[in-house]
Length: 219
Image 1 (cartoon, one colour):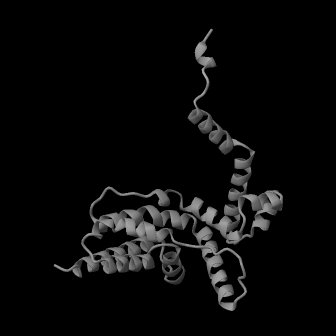
Image 2: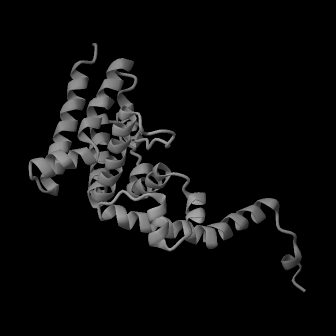
Image 3: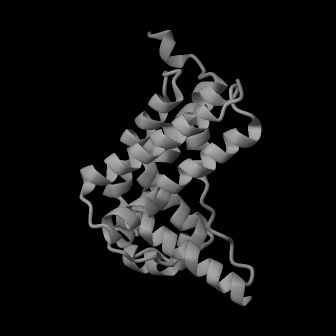
C-alpha cells in the first residue's frame, strides 16, 4: 500500500487547490466570458453597460452584476486586461531617461493594439465628467484612471533623490502628457502619423522632458 496517498493534505495545499479549482470553475469561466465579450465590444468602439455585456454574452443580468457591480468596474477590468504586461513593467536600469524609453517601448505598442478599448474607456470618463458637471451623475461609481501615475513615477525613480519633490512630481506630470491613448489621438488622428513616427515623437518628447529636469537640478 502506498501510504503517501493517504497522507492528509496540508491546509495550505488544500487552499491552493481550492483556489486553482475556483479559477477553472464555472464562476471563472463566466467572468472570463464577460470580460472577453466586453473587450470585443470595446474594441469595436462601444462603451457597453453591464446589461449590454450580459445580453451579448447570454448571461443573466443578476449574474453579470455579481461579477461587475457597475459599468465603471466592468470597464476598469477590461482596461486592466488590455494593459496586460504594462502593469507589471519593471526596469533594472539606473538611468531615468533609459527607463522612460523602455517603458514607452513596452507600453505604446500595446496601447495602440487596444486603442479602441482605451478610447472607449476615455469616452466613459469624459461622459461621467460631463454628467458630474451637470449634476446628473447621481451615485454612479466613478471610473478612475491612474495607472500612468505609478508607471511614470517608477520610470523616473532614479531621479527621486536628485530632484526636489516638487520637481520630481512635475516631471511625472509632464511625462503623462506624452504617454497614453491621448498621444495616439493627437499624433495619429490629428497629425496623421503612423505607428513608428508616433512612438518616435513620444520618445523624443519624453527624453527632452527628462533632460530638462536634469538641467534644472540644483548643483
